[in-house]
Length: 240
View 1: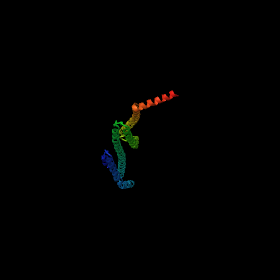
View 2: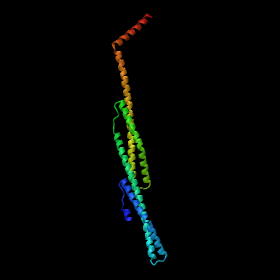
View 3: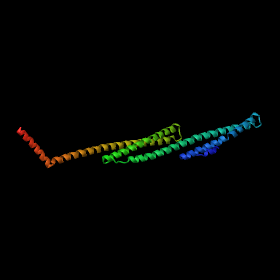
């Protein structure tokens, strides 16, 4: 049984880790199934020793060896259980961090877009789109936080891959922070673009109003009416 337990190796994915744990628990079932046989053998041997059997010394030695081997087997099984559970935790962590990396890659691609809009409507549409993006990032934050806590738990429990877990966690958090920074920068740029488009609109409206007034002021009939009005005012003053 020792050789069988030692023969199992670490898994390379979640499914493999689950199968390994199931198989290891089956080994424990086999050990437990032999418990009655072990107890009977121990009781029989003890009776021989207590009855001063001529082979009492040999029986006593065999009982000691049997007890020692059983203890070693149970210790080995427990050691491997801890190892396989750590293996399962590691595979779960790696799976989830890979999913987070894939998600972040898509978000980073979204932020590569440098389009700031060329009209008020287009900038408003881009701001709405960015707002939706920020909501999705916020929703994902809980998963990132859970991964951070899971990694801390593995490290604190002295997991055999603690250094790799810490490095992977730090890399993930660094990407997360960089993503937030880029997202914040793009929002700032879009808000500035929005302010500029409002300024452009107001300038165009003011310019249009000025041009309309200039056009009106340049009209011949308008000038004649102004002249007549001024002449009438002068005439009234003279009469007065």
